[in-house]
Image (cartoon, rainbow over all chains, first blue to last red; front, top):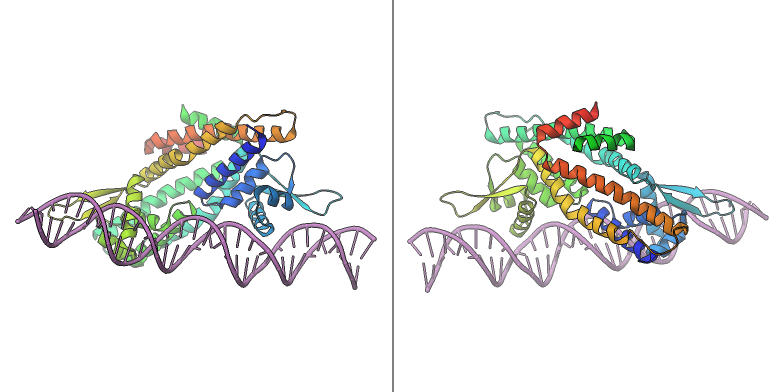
Amino acid sequence: MKLQEGKEKFIQAWGTLGSNWGISRTMAQVHALLMVSPESLSADEIMEELQISRGNVNLNIRALIDWGLVFKEHKSGDRKEYFFAEKDVYKVFRQVVKERRKRELEPVFKVLEDVKVVEGDQKDPAVKAFTETISGIRKFAGKADKALDTISRAEESWFLSALLKLMK
Amino acid sequence: MKLQEGKEKFIQAWGTLGSNWGISRTMAQVHALLMVSPESLSADEIMEELQISRGNVNLNIRALIDWGLVFKEHKSGDRKEYFFAEKDVYKVFRQVVKERRKRELEPVFKVLEDVKVVEGDQKDPAVKAFTETISGIRKFAGKADKALDTISRAEESWFLSALLKLMK
DNA sequence: ATAAACTTTCAAAAGTTATTGAAAGTTCGA
DNA sequence: TCGAACTTTCAATAACTTTTGAAAGTTTAT
């Protein structure tokens, strides 16, 4: 397989994976392109490679920077900005875990906290079912949150050895 | 807080969570409604509670059944079908892990396998960067896949005690 | 075999999200 | 301060996804 073909296949696959997980397809594609580029790229180069507009590149690059997955670089004697991605997959994973935990788990906790006590007779099956489901979710979410926090702080070596132990 | 209000808040929150993770909002809302209902519900009851059409209920119920999160029930003396959800949050989690692993990780593996060897000089930085990134992702994905497989087979008690150890 | 009660399908409509491109804004060197 | 080189914004538009509802299909009791 030719390099260009491989790149394109990988970029498409990464884009699909992203869009299945609530990350915009283009954002994931820009990320994929930067992951396989040895040098940092300018906005123009990204436009050219992915055939997307300047505005779109700008929007998605900023989102990636916001997620902590992409960084800016300035080359001397050049006024353009250049961008490069974190290439260590484990660091990417940890960063995504960290961000999504903050963005999505926290609002859910807030709602669970809000609704955990509803008025009414605990003998009413409707009240009982509601209370029990919410309480089950709260317990599970608390544990998941701790686990994710641990993962997002962990060193790769530590994490992998712990995983291996887990799998014995 | 009144039960009805709590239910509505929870259903909205679950819907938002779902749509952030690539699951349709309505599918997550139907799931949430069934999670907090003590009895199984008919299509009509779901239509009524969530104010959505019959076709929409049917589509999303079938998807939930396909995911293994919701089940059918027949009540004697009644020709309607009734639906109820798995309420054990850990089982729900395991089922989702299992399904997404199958649906999404597998196609990505296939592409990674396809593109892992590209023609050209390994001293060419473009080829080298590509090869190294793909190889990093393959290694990580292999480990993640094993971990998810373990989780999706594990008993809750086992899983939680392993997590606790992990967190010491 | 029929009809009532129910479920499923699917094309059109509505709603949502992503993309464009041109205009506005910013930065920098001379 | 000016103008060139670049980045950012945002309203319009395009693309995609979800929802509807009526028609078709299926099942069951008699």
